[in-house]
Image (tube, rainbow, N blue to C red):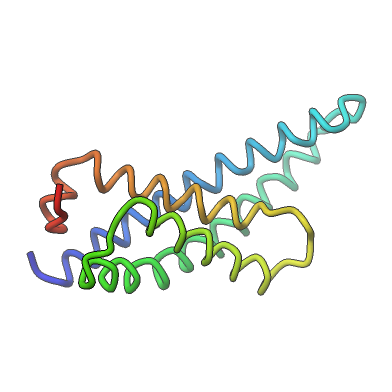
Length: 139
C-alpha cells in the first residue's frame, strides 16, 4: 500500500481515537465533579461550558495526535519497536507536552487523554484486520 494511503488511514484512526478519548475524558471529568462535591448540582449553563471544553480539547488533541502520532508510528515501525506499550508511552508524552504547553491547571486530564487516545488507536489497529493488513503490521 502506498505511503499516502497509509498516512491517510492513520490520520483517520488517530483523529477518531482523539475524539473518542476527549468524550471519555469529559465524561470522567463530570463524574469527578459530581463525586467530589455531590451538593453542587449541574445547571444547564454548565453543560454549555462542558461542550466548549470538549470542543477545545478536540481542536487541540486531533492535530496533536496526527502531527506527532503519524511520524512516531512510522519511526517505531521502522525500528521494529511498535507495540501497544510504546504507542501508549508516546501518547502519554504527547499529552504531557500539550498539557504543559497550553494549560496551567494541576489536573492530569491531557496526560490521561493522550494515554487513552493512544490506547484506543492501538486497539483499533490491532483489532481490525483490515487496518493491520493495510498498514502491514506484524501479528
